[in-house]
Image (cartoon, rainbow, N blue to C red; front, top):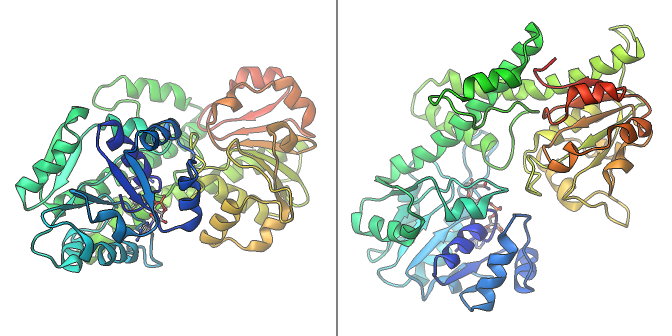
Length: 450
Ligand SMILES: NC(=O)c1ccc[n+]([C@@H]2O[C@H](COP(=O)([O-])OP(=O)(O)OC[C@H]3O[C@@H](n4cnc5c(N)ncnc54)[C@H](O)[C@@H]3O)[C@@H](O)[C@H]2O)c1
């Protein structure tokens, strides 16, 4: 396994559980140190148990260099990052580096399996970089979801293998045979296309339901009942139809941009996809507007009066969704950045983030992602991260719930009301019961529900 991150580790764990032996190469010294000490560098349910078991049974090991992981193996999985370039295309530097590193060390007859999400034609690129007739390269896109990655790897909906060599495709499929998942064997270009189309379709569903929630706000309908009415239709279903503060994470933003770039390069006009991206960007602004409007209504301010400067806003949830500590491209960070830009201070809480004891007190992962998103570092001076949910709310003018962590559902509403300076509650995930919140004295605002 080349790359022990959000895909590499759950895939390794699944393969170990299925009875295979796995060696993971991880080039990040800090991640490697944690793994070598028996820890797990990412928050993922069920992962520590499987990793520890694999290690105890001697079927899972970790090394620092890709070359030394592959000389004795039948399959080499590439699970390295393919981040977004400034022009929206996928950056293949890590993939090419990995191919260069493993090339000379691969065992003759072994198969290189690319799991990274890559533009059409990248399997060929890996083949050309390795440049060996005795090695087969196949595409095997990964569909796991962070938060349920181990379960998804053990019980995938399907396995897609793209290869010219049908024998190699069958060998890769056989590795996962005991999962019982349907096997889709196709050519490499089609497998690469399937992955982008799957992610952009899911992003489309989310943008669609966020737009529908906006419509419900405008006409006074309840999006939650709209979803019930839709979801029982078997042609539609319930998945990926929950409104929120917009989609994010390490995949959807870069993959929608990458597919748009691929389409453009191929001369195909894809305005639907551009609109999916634009709708998502508008959602961040919509959530901040809800906050401003609710505060303005509560304080009886004129429409022209700025409402956020000098105020303190509490935020619950910073990761891109519940069940993960991943902050990459988190919509919550986008909302927080806009609130800070408006002149307020933000006190945030997230179950997976702890403030540092030293100055600067912000978690390193947060500061890193803030920089990656291109937000001004100066805004961070007005952001603090609390170690408890209640501490973030003391004296704040409003609370925004941005991530759907279960513990936020169970909040003691009267205690929360007592902690906040103003009873303004913006529930961007529709987690709470509006009736109970209003009975506790809150000005409650959800997404697409009265
Ligand atoms: N995160 C997801 O939910 C998800 C789901 C499906 C597909 N993908 C795709 O899988 C790929 C990996 O994503 P991720 O989220 O696991 O990234 P990640 O950053 O969590 O993990 C990648 C790891 O690879 C390591 N690495 C990079 N080059 C290396 C090398 N030459 N040798 C050894 N280690 C190396 C990095 O240090 C890092 O730890 C991306 O293309 C992504 O789009 C991600």
